[in-house]
Length: 382
Image (cartoon, rainbow, N blue to C red; front, side, top):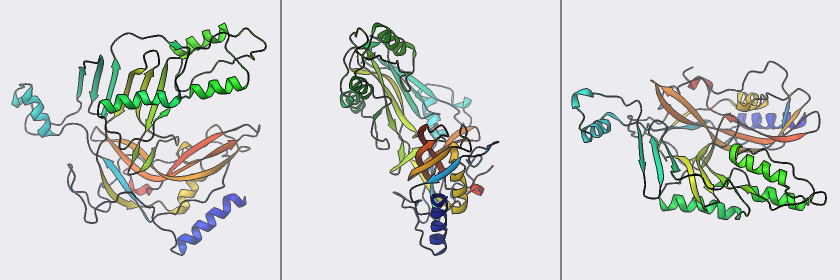
């Protein structure tokens, strides 16, 4: 109980004494507002109401588990800087230029056309087919030639696998300034090292299971075969999936961007084919400029209540006998995707990423993470 109550009283006392300092932002809106392709954005509440309902913890019908924290809450700000990604669909002038280049009659556009979607597709001399979707602001690509071997018998190091993706992106001049450090979605080298340390090996049956996984299973959250002890079976040469997934996480203004479940938002996903030591396919979101404006912050007591309810992830799947302990708080941004006048819009809402572990009544422990946005609820339109 002390763990849960002490941080609350401490934070409230500091807030009342004026000791809580605003969260530092890497970049802040211009004091007198700033120009934008969509018009002038004022310093305070320059986007008006944020479209959509306020993100909030899901409603529970049962009893919540106990949520404690063994770390100090970050300093509570007096206001937060909301970011709005600029629109990616062509504006009327650009749309008119495209249609003019394609020799379309000017009359079919009328005076103020509104683009609803735009896609492009092309092939390059290296054998890749590329697709650009302006509404998603995303480029996808794949190598046109057939699939190689599904498994390999030898794995390069983790750094070497990641370097195949880095070289691919560098050769094509792809901007990654808002991407985090690349990570493998699953570290097969680490898993195999753990198996060897336990003196386990692959059999004909486990190699068959690995081939099935490589062809039809998930390469991001693989269902791993159970390997027997090498002293009990006839071991064979190991095989591993030839395709390895590499993720780059999204950041904005030097802060990590998170989703509803507290997971880091992915900015790019590349599939490396170890049968050819090259990138086979993938996608990435183009770096897009953002506008900034300050908004009032959610009161500290409301933020604490949302944390006690499990944040945006909620506590579904946990019972009143389970205990969730938060061990780390980090400032970050929540990606708020919504629609305005039928067009997709993306906002980044400052808040707190909380991570730790959950201990069930059965004494089983597992990781837990969530996110608590700090934008006041009445700043949203619904």
